[in-house]
Length: 280
Image (cartoon, rainbow, N blue to C red; front, side, top):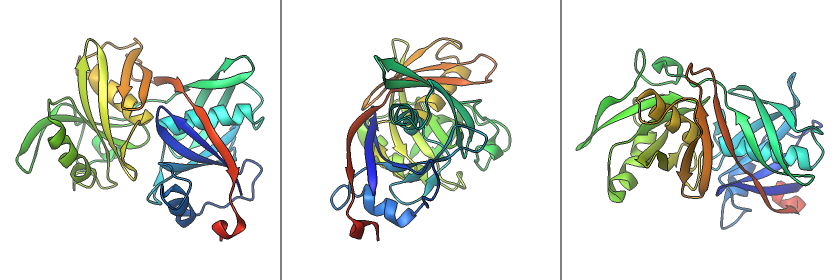
């Protein structure tokens, strides 16, 4: 089986091409392939599938075998790979995801795509739609857990996020990340973003649902910027520099919350073929 290994500011993926059909999603295979000791090693597997009234479809399987509705770094990798491999022969493309149909525009260096800008669609703030066990919006609400008290905001970018700008030390963050992912407030679990605002830039550590601590999370960067904008920490309609452990993204939040734009790189790390016995 042919595969490609991509990374988007450290968030790494195995990409499989099923754009012509005939490729079935295999969650157990994905778990094995993502294992960093016995497999290829990745945060998840990106399946490029035939479009559904779009150019292509992206399906995202996390390292634990669960399926994510969306992946911000992943969709950039898919757009770049689709262009460079000739699956889609145009700079602007539409990609169907479980979070809806999204528009991607690749950035070229010569004739090669090296980055992409994604219209991530409108953020969701209604609690039941995120989903969280909460009526209405959960914006800068007080949250008590164990001995900790802090304020947080819940946002969906097609997948759920729980964002806090509370000052915390690394030990507290290390403890809270995996515990909050599975908290009873989140019926489908959640991604958790621990943010700092420094000189107008957002710095984030992310505990990613289904993948644990990751170097980057594109939807997390978008959700965190939405949370910062609606609470007055950063301006709307302005590209905000967002730093994750693996690198930088630029995120712009529309003042009417009709869309969020995310811009960042995607790099091919290597490609290869798996032996037949690995696919069994």
